[in-house]
Length: 285
Image (tube, rainbow, N blue to C red; front, side, top):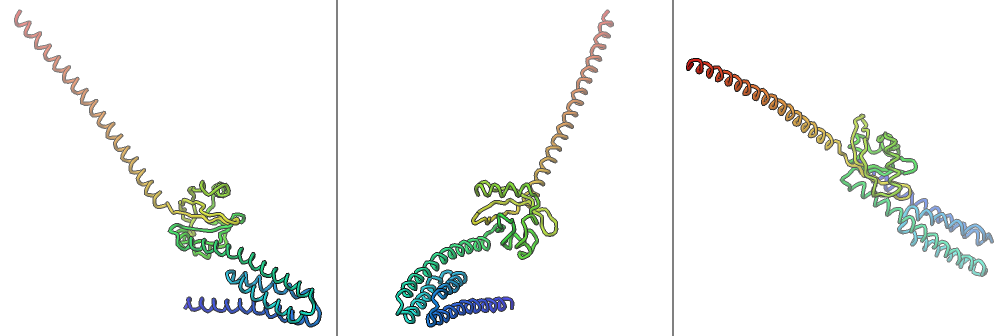
C-alpha cells in the first residue's frame, strides 16, 4: 500500500513538473508571437530563460537538448514573423547563443551537484558503518542512514534537520573535531560519547570522510560493546593480579613461619645436645 502511494505521488510530481515547464514554454511562445506582431521587441526574449532554468532544475541531464529545441523554436518564430527587420534577426541569433550557453553552464553545474548527491546517497545506503551528513556552518544533520539512527534508538526522520548537539553533547569535542575536519580529513578520527534517545551513553569512533560545499560526511563506529568487554577483561586481569599478590604474600608469610620454626627446632636440638654432652662429661669424671 505504501509503495503504491509513493508510486502515485511520484507520478503526480512528474506530471506537475511537465505542466510547469509546458506552461512556461507556451507563455513564452505566445508572448513572442504577440510581441512580434505588435512591434514590442524588448521583453519577450527574457521569457525563455524561465523554462530553461526549470528544465535544468527538474531534468539536468536533458536540459541542453530541451534548451536547444526551445531556442530553435524561438529563432524560427523570429525569422518567420520578423524577417523584414534585420536588427531583430541579428538580436534573435545572439539570444539563441545566450540561451544555449545558459543551458550548458547551468546543466553542467546541476549535473555535478546531482552526481555528488548520488555519491553521498550511495554511501549512506551501502555503508556498513553509521553515516550522517551535516552542514558545517549550522551543524544540522541533513541526512543519516538507518544503521546510525538505529544505534541511537531514533527514527531517521526525527534526526534530520536537528543540530548535532542533540546526540553529541560534548561541545569541546565538537569544536576540536570540526576544526580538524577543516584542516584536513586525515586527522579527524576521535572517540566521542553520544546520547541515545533513551538517554543511554554510547561510545563511538567518529571520523570525517568527505567535505564539500560546507557539508561534512561523517562515519561512526559503535565501540560501546568492545569497550565493555575491554573493561571486563581489564577488571578480570586486575582481580587475577590481586589474587596473585595475595597468594604471594601468603606464601612469603608461610615461608617465614616455616623458616622460624626450623630455626627454633635447630636451637632446641642444639640445646638438648649440649645438655647431654655435659652429663656425659660429669659421668666420666
